Image (cartoon, rainbow, N blue to C red; front, top):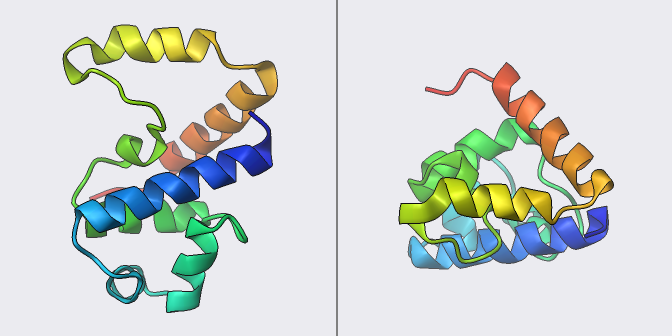
Length: 111
């Protein structure tokens, strides 16, 4: 998965989760403190989400942060096994992007 493909998958996932939460783009934008156009750009992979917005998005959607990054259907009961299998199929570049995201998330204080 190339970085641009990652942004597309993230945008698709964000839209899916937003709709499941019964939120409009305007609602999510208000919760996160951005313009509605920004949410549209995220969902359509025109602009990447800045890392400081990720906890705010997850909070607005009432989900744990990791669910924003689950692009495949994963059985919750076997999540650890599924995540390991998923990680083993990723390329080095994909893992670098993922680990950069994780490092940045670890630096944030999440209430």
